[in-house]
Image (cartoon, rainbow, N blue to C red; front, side, top):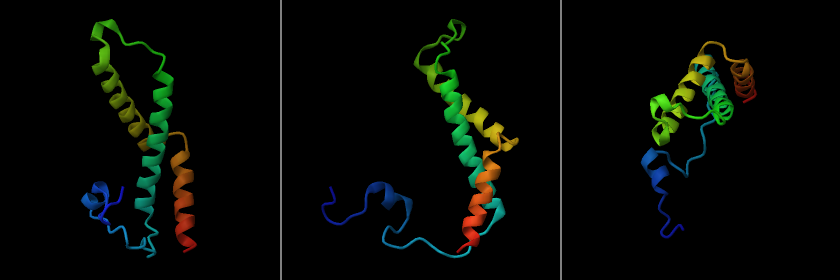
Amino acid sequence: MDTDGALPLSVAASGIDAAAPPSTAATADPAAARKAAEDFESFFLSQAFENMFSGVEADAIFGGGNSETVYRSLLLQEYAKVAARRGGIGIANAVQREILRAQEKR
């Protein structure tokens, strides 16, 4: 659907130059690698928590319905973030190690 060579709105709005190749500068920043690794583990745990709670019905005391479904999802995402920050299940350590190893090879 590219009619005139214009960038899609999401790319244009992000300020990213789609024609520019990705930077290959050395970026072996352990703090940034740790944050990316924790974000990955948080996402993984969030998906696991969603599956764990998928069969649990909404409590009638709180009203249930669509609102509770949305807020449950947000609550589970926050649980996942806290779990990842507190050590999680070890995924972040492995991901951080691999990120740093990949950056060293450059």
